[in-house]
Image 1 (cartoon, each protein chain N blue to C red):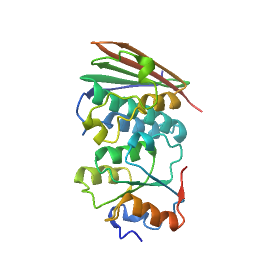
Image 2 (cartoon, one colour):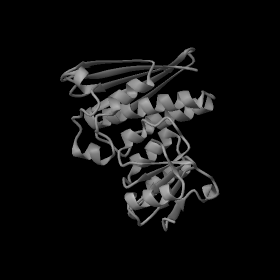
Image 3 (cartoon, rainbow over the protein chains, first blue to last red):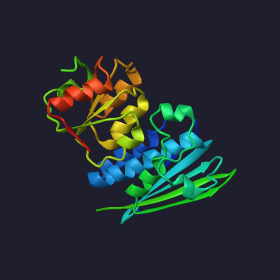
Length: 139
Length: 106
Protein backbone atom coordinates (compact mmCIF):
# COMPACT_ATOMS: atom_id res chain seq x y z
CA UNK A 1 0.00 0.00 0.00
CA UNK A 2 1.20 3.48 -0.86
CA UNK A 3 -0.91 5.53 1.52
CA UNK A 4 -3.85 5.39 3.95
CA UNK A 5 -6.15 8.32 4.71
CA UNK A 6 -8.75 8.42 7.47
CA UNK A 7 -11.57 10.90 8.17
CA UNK A 8 -14.32 11.08 10.77
CA UNK A 9 -17.82 12.05 9.65
CA UNK A 10 -20.59 13.34 11.92
CA UNK A 11 -24.20 12.39 11.17
CA UNK A 12 -26.51 15.33 10.49
CA UNK A 13 -23.76 17.86 9.85
CA UNK A 14 -24.59 18.95 6.31
CA UNK A 15 -22.22 21.91 6.33
CA UNK A 16 -19.30 19.46 6.52
CA UNK A 17 -20.69 16.82 4.15
CA UNK A 18 -18.15 16.38 1.38
CA UNK A 19 -15.15 17.58 3.36
CA UNK A 20 -13.52 14.15 3.44
CA UNK A 21 -14.19 13.59 -0.27
CA UNK A 22 -12.66 16.98 -1.01
CA UNK A 23 -9.52 16.11 0.98
CA UNK A 24 -9.17 12.76 -0.80
CA UNK A 25 -9.57 14.52 -4.16
CA UNK A 26 -6.75 16.94 -3.31
CA UNK A 27 -4.38 14.10 -2.38
CA UNK A 28 -5.21 12.12 -5.55
CA UNK A 29 -4.60 15.20 -7.69
CA UNK A 30 -1.26 15.82 -5.99
CA UNK A 31 -0.29 12.21 -6.70
CA UNK A 32 -1.07 12.71 -10.38
CA UNK A 33 -3.79 10.04 -10.55
CA UNK A 34 -5.74 9.93 -13.84
CA UNK A 35 -8.59 12.55 -13.70
CA UNK A 36 -11.16 9.97 -14.86
CA UNK A 37 -10.22 7.72 -11.93
CA UNK A 38 -10.28 10.69 -9.53
CA UNK A 39 -13.79 11.61 -10.62
CA UNK A 40 -15.05 8.04 -10.19
CA UNK A 41 -13.47 7.85 -6.73
CA UNK A 42 -14.74 11.19 -5.46
CA UNK A 43 -18.25 10.84 -6.88
CA UNK A 44 -18.61 7.41 -5.23
CA UNK A 45 -17.04 8.67 -2.02
CA UNK A 46 -19.11 11.86 -1.89
CA UNK A 47 -22.38 9.96 -2.36
CA UNK A 48 -21.32 7.55 0.39
CA UNK A 49 -20.22 10.40 2.68
CA UNK A 50 -23.56 12.17 2.19
CA UNK A 51 -25.27 8.88 3.08
CA UNK A 52 -23.44 8.78 6.43
CA UNK A 53 -24.41 12.39 7.15
CA UNK A 54 -27.99 11.72 6.03
CA UNK A 55 -28.65 8.40 7.75
CA UNK A 56 -26.05 7.55 10.41
CA UNK A 57 -24.97 8.96 13.77
CA UNK A 58 -21.29 9.01 12.88
CA UNK A 59 -18.80 7.22 10.68
CA UNK A 60 -15.21 6.73 9.63
CA UNK A 61 -13.96 6.88 6.06
CA UNK A 62 -10.71 5.14 5.20
CA UNK A 63 -9.11 5.42 1.77
CA UNK A 64 -6.35 2.94 0.94
CA UNK A 65 -4.22 3.95 -2.00
CA UNK A 66 -2.93 0.60 -3.22
CA UNK A 67 -0.64 -0.39 -6.08
CA UNK A 68 -3.53 -1.39 -8.33
CA UNK A 69 -6.30 1.00 -7.26
CA UNK A 70 -8.10 2.81 -4.47
CA UNK A 71 -10.12 1.05 -1.80
CA UNK A 72 -12.67 3.08 0.15
CA UNK A 73 -14.12 1.67 3.36
CA UNK A 74 -16.96 3.60 5.02
CA UNK A 75 -17.98 2.34 8.45
CA UNK A 76 -20.90 3.96 10.20
CA UNK A 77 -22.75 3.65 13.46
CA UNK A 78 -26.40 4.04 12.63
CA UNK A 79 -29.75 2.39 12.06
CA UNK A 80 -28.40 0.05 9.37
CA UNK A 81 -30.15 -1.00 6.15
CA UNK A 82 -32.89 -3.61 6.67
CA UNK A 83 -33.15 -4.58 2.98
CA UNK A 84 -30.01 -3.91 0.93
CA UNK A 85 -31.55 -5.14 -2.35
CA UNK A 86 -34.36 -2.63 -1.95
CA UNK A 87 -31.90 0.14 -1.03
CA UNK A 88 -30.03 -0.55 -4.28
CA UNK A 89 -33.15 0.03 -6.40
CA UNK A 90 -32.97 3.34 -8.27
CA UNK A 91 -35.51 5.75 -6.85
CA UNK A 92 -35.93 4.04 -3.47
CA UNK A 93 -35.09 6.37 -0.58
CA UNK A 94 -35.78 6.81 3.11
CA UNK A 95 -34.13 10.25 3.23
CA UNK A 96 -35.57 13.11 5.28
CA UNK A 97 -36.91 16.39 3.91
CA UNK A 98 -33.68 18.06 5.03
CA UNK A 99 -31.60 15.66 2.92
CA UNK A 100 -33.84 16.26 -0.10
CA UNK A 101 -33.48 20.02 0.35
CA UNK A 102 -29.72 19.52 -0.03
CA UNK A 103 -30.26 17.98 -3.47
CA UNK A 104 -29.97 14.34 -2.42
CA UNK A 105 -32.30 11.59 -1.21
CA UNK A 106 -33.72 10.63 -4.59
CA UNK A 107 -32.61 7.02 -4.37
CA UNK A 108 -29.72 7.50 -6.78
CA UNK A 109 -26.74 7.43 -4.43
CA UNK A 110 -26.09 3.71 -3.97
CA UNK A 111 -26.70 2.87 -7.67
CA UNK A 112 -24.35 5.73 -8.61
CA UNK A 113 -21.67 4.37 -6.28
CA UNK A 114 -22.06 0.95 -7.91
CA UNK A 115 -21.78 2.47 -11.41
CA UNK A 116 -18.49 4.13 -10.51
CA UNK A 117 -16.95 1.18 -8.69
CA UNK A 118 -15.12 -1.88 -9.98
CA UNK A 119 -16.06 -3.68 -6.76
CA UNK A 120 -18.80 -2.66 -4.34
CA UNK A 121 -20.39 -4.39 -1.42
CA UNK A 122 -22.51 -3.43 1.55
CA UNK A 123 -22.66 -5.17 4.90
CA UNK A 124 -25.25 -3.87 7.32
CA UNK A 125 -26.67 -4.79 10.69
CA UNK A 126 -29.94 -3.19 11.73
CA UNK A 127 -29.51 -1.13 14.90
CA UNK A 128 -25.72 -1.15 14.62
CA UNK A 129 -24.44 0.26 11.36
CA UNK A 130 -23.30 -0.19 7.82
CA UNK A 131 -20.01 -0.84 6.04
CA UNK A 132 -19.45 0.06 2.40
CA UNK A 133 -16.49 -1.41 0.60
CA UNK A 134 -15.63 0.24 -2.71
CA UNK A 135 -12.70 -0.52 -5.01
CA UNK A 136 -11.76 1.48 -8.08
CA UNK A 137 -8.87 0.38 -10.30
CA UNK A 138 -6.33 2.72 -11.80
CA UNK A 139 -6.43 3.04 -15.58
CA UNK B 1 -28.40 37.26 -22.13
CA UNK B 2 -29.59 36.10 -18.73
CA UNK B 3 -28.89 39.41 -16.96
CA UNK B 4 -26.43 37.42 -14.90
CA UNK B 5 -24.12 38.85 -12.30
CA UNK B 6 -20.70 37.27 -11.81
CA UNK B 7 -20.30 36.46 -8.12
CA UNK B 8 -16.82 34.98 -8.40
CA UNK B 9 -14.42 33.55 -10.98
CA UNK B 10 -14.24 36.56 -13.36
CA UNK B 11 -11.09 35.03 -14.87
CA UNK B 12 -13.33 32.47 -16.61
CA UNK B 13 -15.37 35.14 -18.44
CA UNK B 14 -13.68 34.41 -21.77
CA UNK B 15 -13.86 30.62 -21.46
CA UNK B 16 -15.95 28.79 -24.00
CA UNK B 17 -18.26 25.95 -23.03
CA UNK B 18 -20.30 23.64 -25.16
CA UNK B 19 -22.67 21.88 -22.79
CA UNK B 20 -25.10 22.74 -20.00
CA UNK B 21 -27.17 20.70 -17.56
CA UNK B 22 -30.07 22.02 -15.49
CA UNK B 23 -30.98 20.24 -12.26
CA UNK B 24 -31.80 20.79 -8.62
CA UNK B 25 -30.96 17.16 -7.91
CA UNK B 26 -27.29 16.88 -7.09
CA UNK B 27 -27.28 13.07 -7.33
CA UNK B 28 -28.35 13.50 -10.95
CA UNK B 29 -25.48 15.93 -11.60
CA UNK B 30 -23.12 13.36 -10.07
CA UNK B 31 -24.14 10.75 -12.65
CA UNK B 32 -22.67 12.81 -15.50
CA UNK B 33 -19.38 11.60 -16.90
CA UNK B 34 -18.49 14.80 -18.75
CA UNK B 35 -16.74 17.62 -16.88
CA UNK B 36 -16.62 20.81 -18.91
CA UNK B 37 -20.23 22.01 -18.65
CA UNK B 38 -22.38 24.71 -17.07
CA UNK B 39 -24.65 23.69 -14.21
CA UNK B 40 -27.90 25.67 -14.11
CA UNK B 41 -29.66 25.20 -10.78
CA UNK B 42 -32.12 26.76 -8.40
CA UNK B 43 -30.58 24.89 -5.48
CA UNK B 44 -28.26 27.34 -3.77
CA UNK B 45 -26.45 25.74 -0.87
CA UNK B 46 -22.98 24.50 -0.02
CA UNK B 47 -23.73 21.05 -1.44
CA UNK B 48 -24.36 22.51 -4.91
CA UNK B 49 -20.80 23.85 -4.90
CA UNK B 50 -19.46 20.59 -3.39
CA UNK B 51 -21.21 18.67 -6.16
CA UNK B 52 -19.55 20.91 -8.74
CA UNK B 53 -16.21 20.29 -7.05
CA UNK B 54 -16.66 16.49 -7.17
CA UNK B 55 -17.93 16.67 -10.77
CA UNK B 56 -14.91 18.71 -11.90
CA UNK B 57 -17.14 21.42 -13.28
CA UNK B 58 -16.11 25.06 -13.23
CA UNK B 59 -19.32 26.95 -13.98
CA UNK B 60 -22.49 27.28 -11.91
CA UNK B 61 -25.41 29.54 -12.77
CA UNK B 62 -27.87 30.04 -9.92
CA UNK B 63 -31.38 30.99 -11.02
CA UNK B 64 -33.98 33.24 -9.37
CA UNK B 65 -31.51 35.45 -7.50
CA UNK B 66 -30.87 32.80 -4.86
CA UNK B 67 -28.74 33.85 -1.91
CA UNK B 68 -25.11 32.85 -2.44
CA UNK B 69 -23.40 32.58 0.94
CA UNK B 70 -19.81 33.54 1.74
CA UNK B 71 -19.11 29.88 2.48
CA UNK B 72 -20.26 28.93 -1.04
CA UNK B 73 -18.10 31.66 -2.61
CA UNK B 74 -15.05 30.58 -0.58
CA UNK B 75 -15.44 26.96 -1.67
CA UNK B 76 -15.95 28.02 -5.29
CA UNK B 77 -12.86 30.25 -5.23
CA UNK B 78 -10.81 27.51 -3.62
CA UNK B 79 -11.71 25.30 -6.59
CA UNK B 80 -11.28 27.99 -9.26
CA UNK B 81 -14.97 28.04 -10.18
CA UNK B 82 -17.15 30.72 -11.65
CA UNK B 83 -20.51 31.47 -10.04
CA UNK B 84 -23.12 33.54 -11.87
CA UNK B 85 -26.47 34.62 -10.46
CA UNK B 86 -29.48 35.44 -12.61
CA UNK B 87 -32.94 36.78 -11.69
CA UNK B 88 -34.48 34.46 -14.32
CA UNK B 89 -35.98 31.05 -13.60
CA UNK B 90 -34.21 27.79 -14.45
CA UNK B 91 -36.71 27.31 -17.29
CA UNK B 92 -36.18 30.76 -18.84
CA UNK B 93 -32.39 30.64 -18.35
CA UNK B 94 -32.18 27.20 -19.95
CA UNK B 95 -34.37 28.30 -22.87
CA UNK B 96 -32.24 31.36 -23.57
CA UNK B 97 -28.96 29.47 -23.39
CA UNK B 98 -30.27 26.54 -25.44
CA UNK B 99 -31.43 29.04 -28.06
CA UNK B 100 -27.97 30.59 -28.02
CA UNK B 101 -26.38 27.26 -28.90
CA UNK B 102 -25.43 25.59 -25.62
CA UNK B 103 -25.89 21.85 -26.07
CA UNK B 104 -27.76 19.57 -23.66
CA UNK B 105 -25.78 16.77 -21.99
CA UNK B 106 -28.67 14.39 -22.86
